[in-house]
Image (cartoon, rainbow, N blue to C red):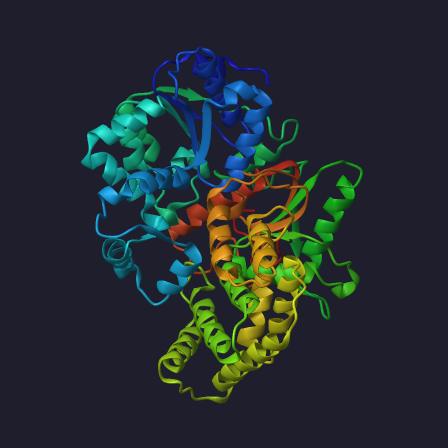
Length: 569
């Protein structure tokens, strides 16, 4: 990368620093060069490291990969790359007992938290999270940064120890930090040098507490040297993708043509799926890249429900278009809770005991499968009826009785099954057993589990299940092994192969890049701008579309309805 005067000045800055730049401008590259510079200067004491924090595990994985290209193996030992979550958990794992001396701290995994908080309103949610920690020692992930900051605030000595361990801290995507993360960072900045990287126009996480004033807070608190890499574009150099993204923010895109950005408007066609045109554009993208090695295409959509709809269509050969193999970036809740049902089946047991456990796991799956989104009233009513059955043994209603009958039937079939000892094969047998259920609420467990991929060769779950079978001849600890594997998956920034075709929400695409991107919104559901959106949400939607477009390296295609299409186009 040729270094601009601004980047050269950034590298020479010895104090707190703030680097602002748009997508693909090389912020991460420059920050890693600065980390390497710090390590190579040999000013670090024994045990000290440069700390690089970012938000998402896939983003951290990409930074790890980039660091390996720029920094020698010996120097890499002095660089720690982590998520904000992972860093805060490290503090709590070692020192959380100072906040709760009465109980051992255990994690409340996000899928289980989703089920627990399903019927708790937003106003009560925070109080319940604190109660779970204070009274039961169960730690919700949303409390990580807050409690870590509390530890630093209570004892200045602990904060000094961490600042001494990490004299330089690089803060990626700083515009997305919430109030608790900012408090934690502020304490680190009292004794460590902070290098913040940000782009106010990529702030799409206001729903989790990102504040438009955060970059200003940083400037006011630390008076950093400020640098602006605007105008630089290394991701999609030679294209007008970044120009389109920037023009989106000010409506200058209207009436202009962009060579590498295509707007496709589709209408309703009799006897043809409304998804037809979007899939046709995906096929066109794959054809353009077929002679290029190791390429990736992403389909970005506004919502999880719409993503699953389109994923089903991609997997079919409806309308004469071929089925396309693809990876779906699912939120963890529904597949993880579905996997717990399968793990219980793998463990086995007597028919009655197994049926009882299945009913309990199904109850949790119904409550928590929506993640942070509250279940529909009908789902909550069903969960309530199952809860009553668990405590009283009584349930009324034909469809609800069918669920209990199906759990009993599946448990009986499982009791008679002989398993192979191959975790992947046996998992598939259990999933198929559920998939054949005549109760829709049971069968969808198998559909949700389809999106969980934790059984590849060498995975923690596969290794644990294989070891249990080898030593005991059964899978008696399958559920515990699954829970551990899911927690590892949450914290480990596993290197993911982003080649091929991927479907994900726009928010999931943040921090990633693909050769081509197809952004698709539906006619009625899955809209980029919701029909009842207020001014603030409209502004957030505009920023989100800009983020989506600028994930592309070579070309971006936006597929929008002909009538009532995206208002920004």
